[in-house]
Length: 225
Image (cartoon, rainbow, N blue to C red; front, side, top):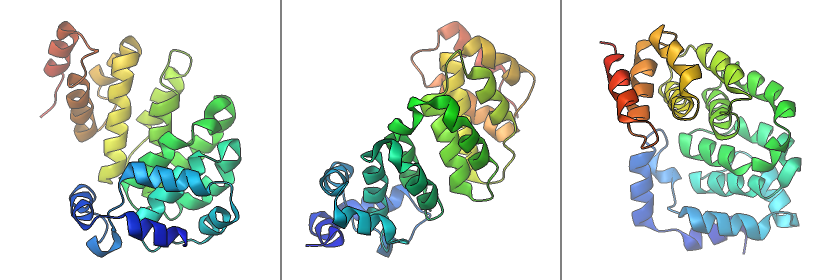
């Protein structure tokens, strides 16, 4: 049984219908309906095998579910996944695969200083999901006192009309507000971001239970019309 055969056999049409509602940027016929835990299980089973290597080199994949397995499989490859992940980013076409890849490749960020130049390169890309990948990697691995200045400087440089880029940037800023409020609030006060990103970042920060009522009240006062 091939990896695709296994994906098909574990998929549910009803779950495919549900997934399509969450990812409207891809066609319904390109979604089989494989649940994430099963995608991870298949990825782990084949990671490091001959079949897995063939699968990783067989791009582009036909189905969204194959891309999810691909993203999870790279997470099981450890620090050797950088070249494969960089190539795969050229075929990523939705937020779910992008974010799954970013959260899965933790091993790449054991040396965060080594990875910063790659993130800066991704953020300058003309491909939307390379940019989003860079932003999600920043929010996953770099929002701390040591890196907050670099993170915010990179965030401020994002100028895009792409919804999924701006949403990721707003998400990043909200995480900065939660974890490093004092370093971040001055940028909100000074209008460093476009209006949509500014308001969305505040909205997402207000959803956090880790921000005090006083800070939330102040953030509400900073919303723009």
